[in-house]
Structures are given as C-alpha cells and as structure tokens.
Image 1: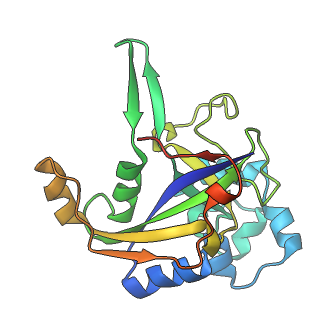
Image 2 (image 1 turned 90 degrees about the vertical axis):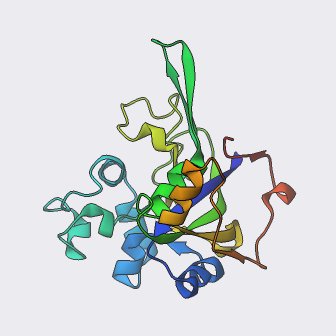
Length: 219
C-alpha cells in the first residue's frame, strides 16, 4: 500500500468554490449531480465498464441501459463516479532511445486553465494505491499509468493518471493554488515558472508522512 501524492486541475472555479472543495473534499461528478448517494449505489457504479467509459469515452453520451443514464444522457463525464488526477509519467521512446517525461504540474495546469484560456485551481492531494486493480473498492485508487497493472492501451497515458473514486476527502487535500491561464502561458514562454494568483491552505490536512510510505509526484 502506497500513499501517492497527486495533482488535480479544475477549470472555472472562483476562490469561494475552491475553498469549499478544500474544506469539504472533492466529490465525483456523479455525487455532485445526484445530490445524495447510497452505499448500494456506490457498489453498483464502481465497475470495470464505468472505469473504461471514464478513461476512454469521457466526452461521449452515457450508454443506453447504463444505470448512470438516469442522471444525464449527455456526456459520461458529467456523471462519472471516478475522479481523474495526475502524478506524472515517463514514456519510453524506443526510436530515440530516450525516456520522455510528462510532468504532472503541466498536465494539471492545462486542465485548470482550459489550455491557458481562463482561470482555475490545482489541488494538491494524496490517494491510496495498492499496486493492483481494485475498481470495486472505493478506498483504493487506480494506477492507470502503471503498465504492469493496466496493460491495455490507454490513449491518454501521457496524463499520468491516478484514478480516485467517489470522493477525495478534505483531510487528504493539502492546498489549492489558483492560476490565470494567459498569464501562466506568458510566464512559460518567457522561461519562468507560472506565477499563481492565490493559495488556499487546509488547516485540517493530515500529512501522509505520519501514516505510511509516501510516493511523490514525478519531477
């Protein structure tokens, strides 16, 4: 079991909404859409079919007959019980004989700012992984980036995904940092680390170093 640090970029948040997530946890889109959920529903929706839809058909309509379709017939991402985060990834390029590094900060920043068009926040958190598939088990997150676990081709592999489920608790969220997309892009083009516009810290954060072995994001 590993406590894996992750980043999560969310676009379109103002400071009040970002603070609410830090204080109350990050809900899956399914929970936010449904309003109230039950343990029986969690058991129903955490399955390999929905995991595949989340990973590879996020922007496509919810399939007819899928129990989640009662909440929305628009894109699956609007009702997914899963939560995408990034920890970065390394891809081996056999042609150039090089390892290609895709940093989690850049992945999260692109999501947070809608590819540098607007403002959003990057949440710093940690999840618990076990080195195996455990889709039905709410408490463990899925290491989608780990080729020894997820051997099927993943078109978004370079996002370095660690897939959470249902909720990332507030006590596992360290902070949220806001960025303005156009300003961040100017900084990057000038060779500077993007300047943030706000940092929200969590006084209730429980440091994972006190609990278990820690695996940092790639840097």
